[in-house]
Structure formats: structure tokens, C-alpha cells
Length: 373
Image 1: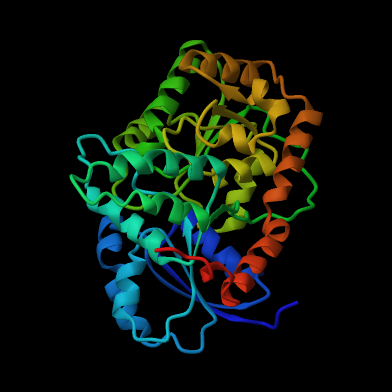
Image 2: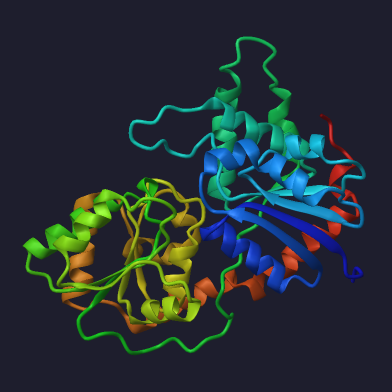
């Protein structure tokens, strides 16, 4: 086993899944990791300017065996602005700007995609948070590069692919736990995603409207983090479902958040974008039954034996399946337990050995031996 090594972790957007991952890696790794962060707001300006801020803030990297950072900053800029020696670097891609959906009325700024490209080329090692995410990135990369009128760096595709791999992020729950067997008498529907357009909250609340029209009784816990202005869909929902809402807003304490997951009967996703889905994995681990789109990463993280029960292909199928779960209580306790146990593999206890191996190989220079940039 390698001696204890020292790493620097730069997180330019310290919130949501980025924060979960950074804190989990630092807490569970056998190595020493210094974490330096910036607040989770203004992501576009983080991609443009985080490298400048970190270079000024950090100064010398001497004494570090490796550098870890995530995708919302320019590694190329940071390396150019930081004096040598520069340790080998690993970039974790939570998302990428080639496949991330645009907000309503927004036009694509191609520079963000090129920042991701140069970061990937500069790094010694790239990790994606799912096979779905990695595949989507490399499917989109050729057409993105071909927008260039000349000097198209087609070679970059293989150069990036050769140093990339998939490593699922760890989740903050133990590998072994006693699944609570009590649920609220009135079924509780859980929303625990970010309050942003790419999670498609309008589709979620439209589904609940149709259930109300069918006289389906339920309660609602609207959890999840909101980074800037509250989207209109949530403002409307607070009034529309006021008599059903048990909790409205982010739970800052993990134990309070987990308490709501223990109470939930069903967790629903209507997302247009999801590369891993920590919130879903957490909810299922604590006993919520998932209803998820049959696309994105969900068929990858939910065991195939449960696809028929847990995945839907249309809004009407979601309404039908959710109505059955809330009215007839058609959740087999054995299935709920088996799903929960399947999520245990994503705990930090289960994945940290793989990450420590990545860090040790990074520090040993194994990933920069055959780079062909």
C-alpha cells in the first residue's frame, strides 16, 4: 500500500453534487486532501475566472503529489498561471458543456465547450460519473469540433478518450443500515432535486395536478437545493399544493434531510438532464420507491430487474404508475428492500478504494506516460 500522499482539491462550485463529492472524497480517502472552494453561484463566471482566483489564492503547488479539480473551471488557464512545479492532475466531470441543456431563451456559448475541451486535454486523468455521461460526451464531441472551419483537432477525441474512465461518485450513507419499515399513513411524495430548469419541475407538478384531479390523496416534501432565484414553478406549487406540503425548501442538516427520505413512499424524477443522480440513489437507499424516466442515466443505476416497475416512458405512464403506488400501496416490501440494498454499492465505503487507487496511480505518474498531445 502506498504511503499517505498529499493532494490539492479545487472546487469552483461548492454546492449540490459538487459539494457532496468533494466532502466525501476528503472525508473517506486514506490520503491527505486539502480542499479549496468557491461558492456555488454564477457558474459561467466560475468557468471564466475560477482559474485566475485559484492561481492567486494558492500560489505554489510545491509539496503536493497531485491536483484534483472538477469541470467548472479551466485547468489550462490555471496551469498557465501557476508557477512550476505542477503536479499531475485529475479532473472529475460531473457535467459537461457539450451536452448540458440550454435554459429557456438561452443560446449556446461555445466557449464553455472549448474550456471543457482544453481542460480535458491538459489533464493527466479524466473521470466521468457514469457510462451514460461518458458516452454522451464522446458522441457529441465530433460534431462540436467539426464546427471549426479549419484545423479541426480530430486527434483530440482519441487523446481524451485514452485517459478517461468512469467512476461513480460516493454517496453519504453506510453500506449497511436498517431500512425503516414505517411510512406516513398518507403517502409522501419526495422531490429532492435541484430547483432548476434541467430537472423539469413543471412536468413534476403537472403530474401532481392530474393526481389531484383524480382525487388521489398524498402529501409532498419539496426538498433539494436552490442556488439563486426560486423558479416560478416552485412559487406556484407552494400555493397550489399548500394543504399537502409537509416540507418546502432545502434541509441543510443531513440528518434532517434523511429523516424526510425515511418518511417518503415514492421519489420521482422528471429530469431532462441527469448524469448520475445522487438524490435518487439516496432516496432509494432510505426506502423510497423510484419512478424515473427510461432514459438518461437511470437505466444504468437502477438494476435491470426493476426497470419495468421503476421506469416510465411518457407523462401518462408516470401518472398511472404513481397513482397506483399512492392509492393501492403496491410497493412490495421485499422489492423496496432489494432496491435499497442495491444502492449500498454507491456508498463512500464501497467506492473509496477505487478512488484511492486512482490518486495513487496519478501521483506515480502512470497516467501521463503515454500522452500524445
